[in-house]
Image (cartoon, rainbow, N blue to C red; front, side):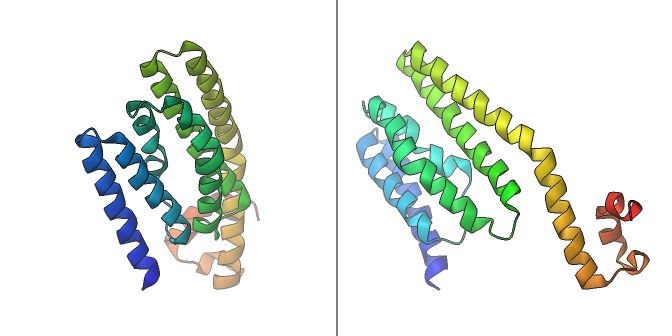
Length: 183
């Protein structure tokens, strides 16, 4: 029961953060988001990128722009890495890497936006380079990772349904058509 209740706590903290942001109490909003982020370690769920990047504009609006990047490096990136490993433990490490790079690209995209709002062109350009780097990394890895993942699932289906693929359910045969034709 504890794991389900932690997700309700996280949701409530995020709602509190949004309420504080609407009241323009951004330092308090930051505190609520930080608390929710630290609680994600206890969750079995993998939260979307918005859950991790929501805090970045709050730093800027609270007049703490300079703290945002360091928080991302010190806290968010390790939290994201751990969350993906735990939340996607059934998936291949290659697919986990694709998702990690996607999350980090979105993080730098949010930093880039905040730098633009803050009028920091050098930061914006630096964050843009990081965004492009991580975007190209996940895009480069995606096709290979998807193929590896499909092959892993195919071997699981072989173990489950047997080697006579004509006996497999149609929907399963359809999914693995490219691999079945090659055998």
